[in-house]
Structure formats: C-alpha cells, structure tokens
Image (cartoon, rainbow, N blue to C red; front, side):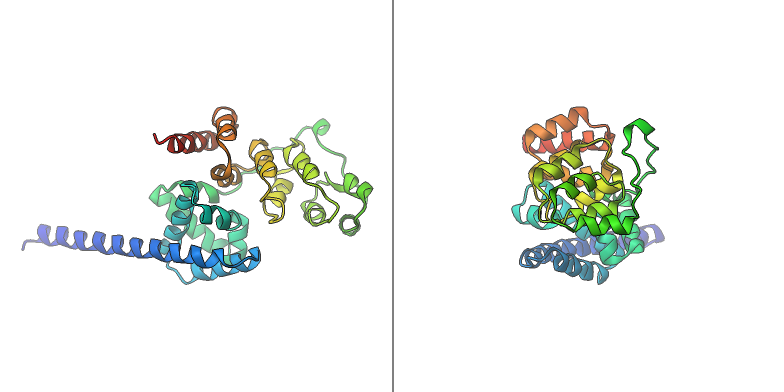
Length: 264
C-alpha cells in the first residue's frame, strides 16, 4: 500500500470513529433527556445537565446540545418541556462556566449547526434617546430590591419598569405579580435587554405562552434568546416573526421552522 492509499485509509478510519462517537453521544443525550424529564426542579435539572456536559469532551458536549436542540425543533414534547430551561447562554454559563460554553459555541459554529445561534455573544446595545427611557430611580438599589419583595400592588406598579435587572429579578418572584404585568414589561420597547433576559431566565414566567410571544416580538430582546423561543411558538406567531422580525437570523429560522412543519 503506497502512502496516498494509506492516508486515505487512515482518513476513512478516523471519519468512521468520529461518526461512531457522534452516534454514541446522541444516544447518551436521548437517555439524558429521559433522566432530566424526571427532575421537576429546574435548578436541579440544570445542575444535572451541567454535570453531564462537564464529563464530556468538547465536541461531545456540542453534539449533546445540538441533539437536544434538534429534538426541540422537531416538536418532541419531552424535549420542549425540559430544554426551555437548559439551552440558554446565561443558564449554561452558570452550570458549566463561561469558558466551557465558549468552547461549545466554537464547536457548534465549526459544524455550522443551527443551535450555535443560541449561544451568540451579546452585542452592545446602543443608548436609547432620553425621551424613550424611564427616569432613573433616586432610591438606592438595595432599598428598591427590599421594596420589590413586598406584596403591595402600588409598589409593583412603581418598580415593574425599574432599569436595574436585580430589582426586576426580585419583583418577578413577588406573589402579587400577574401574568398581564409581566407581558406588559416583556412587550415594552423601553425595557432594557438586561431586564428582558431576566424575564426569559425566570422559570415561573417563561413557561407562559404570552410571555414567550411578547419577548420574541420585542426588538430589544437579544436575538439568541428569540432563537431559543422560536420552536415553542405557534404557526401564526412564527409567520409574523418570519416577515417582521428585526433580526435576520430570527426571520430565517422562523421561515425554516414553518417550512419543516409544512413538511417542505
């Protein structure tokens, strides 16, 4: 066997080995999904998912994420139930660290996998004109956070549009807060991207369909977060985003999802 033939043979073996590893990773991801669906507490589920990714090699972690995203896009009920709280940049960074998420992102981008868009690095937002922003509160942030814990409607109205995401994260756990108020906040173009992320990361509210739609249609919501919400939206909402979203990637992905659902 000459050198060229030996090289081709080696490349074939390496490709076969890679394919076997990928298939094994997909099967492990399917079993992991079954396991995660039996964990009711979102934080525990996230921790278990993080432990699994930490035990994987870099490419295997990326294949796992891609496999779960593929099942979400395909409409798998179990994947849709579990992955809304997993395939998110900030959550994964909390579970495995920013460096590991960066490696997963790089591997997905190299494979040109659609799930890479879920972990796109946030772009700096331009400053909004003064007449489009709410006045900066004069009270110290610690005091505003303490007020946000109180179950008083007047305080909720006062603090709901606080520009500090820490205040909003606190008020999202207030028992007097209603879905209508959260939808109003998620739909407002005056809401900062940091506050919109706080809503999307809240396990209590992101499960509400109206909240998902409001976030997906808000131009201030980071594109990577909208991409993560698309598989959970109904046809009519996908059609609106496919034609009217300000994010190119969102329009393309919404159109792709619609085509898949039509069987094209």
